[in-house]
Every structure is written in structure tokens, then in C-alpha cells.
Image 1 (cartoon, helix red, strand yellow):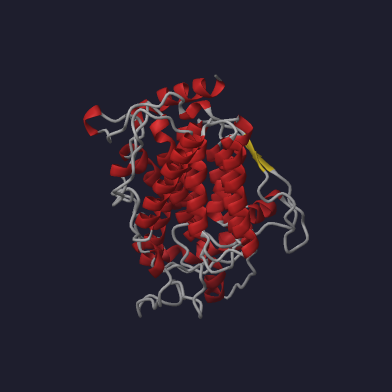
Image 2: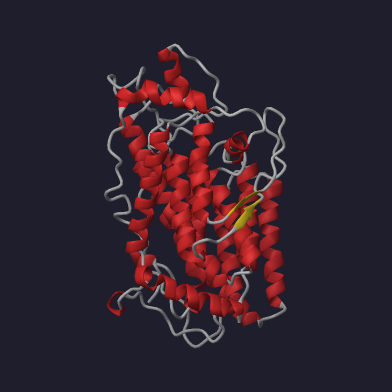
Length: 440
């Protein structure tokens, strides 16, 4: 009953932003007798954990923020695989940019929603980590099999097969759609405009690292109009010397909290930045003992928001091409060694925009002032030999803001770029929240 109560309360909180007039509802078959919110989020938690493991150990052929696609398409597939068992909610397929042809359930028969979720998430992760090691591919297969065998103890064969078939069909449709978003072209050859290189402008490394992603901004947004009004305008190039001096002076001493913060939110090598958000979601769901319905909502809205804010951020980065402080220091004749590095333009700060946007999505679904402890990088040893411990926050927004400011301490972002990133992240998150309607 705890999870049923939770989703009823959360539905009231979301009503003003997610309610859809009945005239715009996607068609849904009749509501199932056993609803999604009667199941725990165990299946989601296990697959979130698997996805983080795959991100940590995947060959270094995918740029950090490109993992936002894994977050987004997995969340969408999970939500669509279980939403027929959520009577207050509807499919969001018709509201997503170019997603068509999703299967629907048969009326008058039962489905086992964890089995549908398991089948969908197994198919998505199997497809999105094609170059995983044989051992990690085997782990994906084993998790799917173990969960399905457990469900076979609780449900008849026909219902289990029907549920698995539906989940796989959802994943197949989402994957076909994902293949057309333009991701294969994000790291093409790039040369900045002749008048926009060197000095106050960012100079691309040679060769261009996989994390540069100069054409990520060309990806198809998941929600049409999510980036409307989110261009931050040009930075103040004339203030670069002053801004760089602040970054130099902000470099923290080893073992201070600011130093620890810089490495806690470094994210790569590690989980990736989207993977860090996936890890936090897993930990919060586990602590709250949330239902499968809540897990699906959070996974979907979080992933959609993070992918679309990444698109908007990368559009601005490669439009304004602002030099990094660890490059402009040489122009000033005041060289310093930053704690971190980054192989793409400085403005706006992506850790600020992505982290704040994800925090807004999590707050929408899971509530404001949701305290949690993040153990994602517990035990990480920094290059200076400092071992990091878990970090605790009073809210998702507090964590998102800390992630943004960590880049000042890391020596890779200016204060103004971080502040602009927070603004952009909230703008895109609000655009999505005000457009995408989950409730009927």
C-alpha cells in the first residue's frame, strides 16, 4: 500500500504540469487487473545497476555525454513497457519527436509488468552496448534469464510469454527510432571558422578526442521545442582575463572539500556523467523502496531531459567556441595546472546545465527536499592519492548545483558559464515539463 499511496500523492503534485486534456490522450487498451504500482522497482533497480556497470567498463569509444542516449532510450522503453498497467497515465509516444508504431497490449488478458520491463531493458541494453566484453554481454543475458525465471514462479506460462513479447516489441520499436536520431555523425571531422580559433576562442585538440562531439547539437531532440528560448547568448569575451584569474585562484588545496567535489563529479573515466545520474536514481529508488511505476516515470523523464539539455548545451558550445581557462592562462602569461581537463568548448558549462536539468526532472517525480546519499564513487582514489567517501545531499537540486560548481574547482569552467548553465538546464527542463504530459 505504501507505493500506491506514494503515486497518488505524486500524481497530485504533478497535476498542474503533467495533466493532459482527454481530447489529446493516446489510445490505451483497458486497464489491467494487477497494476504496475503493485510491483516493487526491483527490476528497474537491477537494470539501472547493470547499465552503470556497462558504462564503467565499456571500451572508450563513446564520448562521455553520448551516454545520455542510453539513459533516455532505456527510460522511454521501460515506461512504455509498463504504462498500460498505470491507469492514471498514458503512452507518451505521440508526444516524442518521430516515435511511431509502438505496439499495444491485447484487451481482456493479463500482463506481468516486471516481466515486460525486464524484456524491454534487456533488449535495450544488449543493443546499446554492442562492443561490451563477452563477460559483460553474458551478464546482461544472465540478469534477463534470472529475473524471467523468478517471474515464472509467480505467473502462468501464457501471461509470462505475452508480457515478454510485449516488452521486447516495445524495445525494438524504440531502438528503430533511436537509430535515426543522428548519433553516428556526432564525431565527424571538425574545423572551427577561421576567425574563431585561438586566443579567446577554443582551439580543438588534434586529433579530436571521442568526447569532443562537435555535432551532438545536431541530434534530433526527443521533445520538439525543448530547446526553445534556451540559447544563452554570447559570453563576455572581454572579461576572459578576469574570469580566468578567478579560476586560477579557486584551485583548491588537496584533501579540501572543494578538491573532493571536483573529483567526485569528474565522472569520466568512471560512470560517465549521464551514468552518474543513473547511479543516483538507482540508489534513491532503492532507499525509498519506490514502486515500478515511480521508477519508470523517473527513468523516462530524467533520460529525456538529460538528452535534450545535452543537445542544447552542445549547440551553444560550438556556436560560441569560448576558450577554456587552462588555455587562456597562457594568453595571459599566467600558466597554471588545472585539476581536470575537457576537450570541447567552455561555454556554457555542461556539468551545470545537465546536472541542474536532471535535478529538476528528479524533483518533479520524486519530490523536493529529497535527501539522499550518493555512493557512486565511494573508494575512488584521486591522482593525488586521496580516497573519496560518499556524499550526502538534502535535495536533487543541491546535488546538481554542487556538480556545476565542481567544475570551477576543477579549473575548467568560469563562474559565469556555470551560472548560465544552471539557467539553461532549468529552461530546457521546464520546457519539457510543460510540454510532455504523462497523466491522462
